[in-house]
Image (cartoon, rainbow, N blue to C red):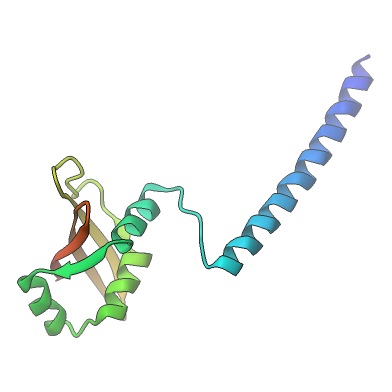
Length: 129
C-alpha cells in the first residue's frame, strides 16, 4: 500500500512538472507576441499604472529635465525600469498618491517624485542622487 502511494505521488509530480513547463512556455510566448507582460509585484504594478495615464510636468520638473538633459525617452525608461521607494512615498493621500521612483540612467542615479492621480500622472521633481 505504501508503495502504491509513492508511485502515484511520482506520477503526480511528473505530470505537474510537465504542466508547469508547458504553461510557462505558453504564457511567455503569448506575452512576447502581444507585447504584454505580467506585473505581480507592487513596484511593477505602480509603475504600469503611472505609465498608463497622460504624463504632465510641473514647472520645476521641466526645468530640471532640461538641466539634466533628459527627454521623454529617459522619463519612460526610468518609469519602466525604476524602483518605487514605498518608505518615502505617500500612498495614503487623496486624491493623488505621491511616489518616489529611483533608477539609474546613463551613469546617473535619478529620483523622480510623481503624483499619481485618477486621470493623470504629474512629474513633480527630478533629482540626481
